[in-house]
Length: 604
Image 1 (cartoon, helix red, strand yellow):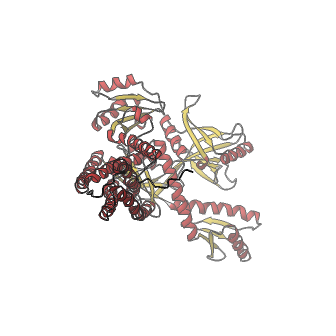
Image 2 (image 1 turned 90 degrees about the horizontal axis):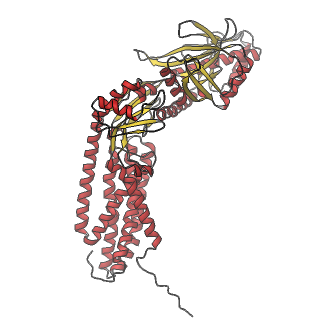
Image 3 (image 1 turned 45 degrees about the vertical axis):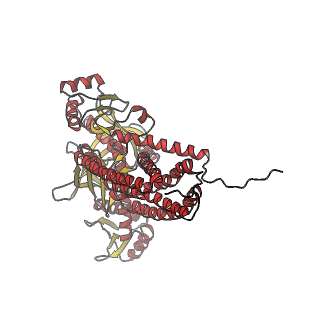
C-alpha cells in the first residue's frame, strides 16, 4: 500500500497562475502603449449636411495654403485630416472652410498617434481631463420659473374643463404673474366642494382663501423641490445627448447646486459650435389651428409676423421625438423628417384621423436671456399645413429655413428638448498649451518620485529590492493600462497626484512583506520558509490597510465631482494594481528564484 505524501510544497505556483499573470500584464501593456504615443492635432469634417470632398481635393487645397497634412483618412461619417501642430490645425480649418462652406461641419480635434494595428485591437490612449487636455467649461442656469409657469397654466386649463364636468357653473380659473392660480367661485357653497375636489385630484397644490369667495392655489414646497430635481435631472440627460450628437467624448456633465449644470468639454479648442448647441433650448410643438371664440386659444406669430390663432394645449410636444433628419424635399426646399415614439405616434394618429382637412401649425420656440438677465421666450409658427391624411409616427415638416437651419433643428430634436430653458452664465476656456504644461509638470513629479523610490528599494533591500522594482514598474504599466481600458475613466491633474501616491502605496506593500521575511530569517528559519511565512503573515495587514483606503476612495468618487473624482479614480485603481503586483507578481518572481533556497544566513 502506497503511503500518501502530505508534505506541503513551499513557494509553489501552479502553471495556470503564471499564465494568468503573463496574459494580464500583456493586455495592460498593450492598453498602455497608445498613451505613450500621444495624440496628433487634427481637423474633422462631418459627413452630415453636405457633399464630402475627396482626399485629393483636400490635399490640393491644403497645398495651396502651404500646409502639409500627415494623413487624410476618409470614413463613412467623417474625414480626419491629421496635421503637424496645433498652429497648422487652425490654419487647416480656415483653408478647408473654402470648400466646405459650412463651419459647423469642421471640428478641431485630437487623434491617437498610435499604430493602426494597435488601435484596431480596441486600445486607445488615456482620456485626459479638462485641466490636462485643455478645452472649455460652461456653467448653465436652469430657469425654473418657466416650468412653474407651465404647470400653473396647465392647472388653469384643466380646472376649466373640470368645472364643466362637475357642473360647477360660473366658476373661473385664472393664472397670476407669480405662478399662482385664482379660482373665482360663484358662491360660498361651492367653496367646500372645490376644495375637496382639488385636495383629491391635485394634492400637490395648496388651496387658501383669497379675497371674497376666491380660492388661491399655489404649489407646495415639496412639489417644487421634486419638480426642480426632476427638471434638472432631465436637462442633464438632454445635455449628455446633445454632447454625444456633437461627437465630443470624455465630457463631464454634472449638477452644481440646486438649479445649475456644469459642463466640461476636454479637447474642445473651438467652443463656438458646442456653445450654440448646449445653450440652445429649441423645441417643436404641434397645435390645432382655431378660430376666434372656439375654446381656449392663444396667438403665435409666424415668421412673417402674421398672427396665427392656435389651441392653447398642443397636440404634441418635442418630448415624443426620438429621431429627426434634415434633407432636401421634392420641391428643393429643406425639410426635417421626424420619427415619434409609440405614445407620440398614437397621439398624432388619433388627432390627424379626427381632423383630416383641418390645418395644423408647427411651432418653434427657444429661450434666450436679455440684457437684464431675464429669460425671454421666442415662439413662432414655422409652418401651417392642412392634414391631408391620417399621420403616424413618421412625417415631415417644412419651413425651418435654410438647409443649415434644418440641420441644426434636427440635431437639437434628436438630442432632446430641454424641460426648462437654460442660459450660459459662465464660460471658461483652458488652452491646450496650459494643459500640456500641466502634463509635463505632473509627470515630472511622478518620474522623480518613482526614480527615488526605485533607487531606495534597490539599495535597502538588495536582491529583494530589485523584485520590488520590477513589481512597481509592472504596477505603473497596469495602472495606465487599466485607466485607458475602463470606459468613462478620465485622467486629471489631481489624478496624477493619485498616481504619485500609488507609487508609495505599492512600495509599502513590498516593504511590509520584506520586513516580515527579515523577521523570519532572524528567528532561524530558512530563506524559503521565511518567504512563505512572510507573505502569509503580511497579507492580513496589507488587505486591511488597502481596504480601508478603498472605502475612502469610493466615498470620494461617489460624492465628489471633477478633480476629486479624478483623484479618487486613480487612488482606487492604484490600490487594486498595487495589491496584485505587490503580492501576486512579487511572489511569482521570488518563488522562481529563491523558492527552494534552504540557506539560513541570507541577508535580506
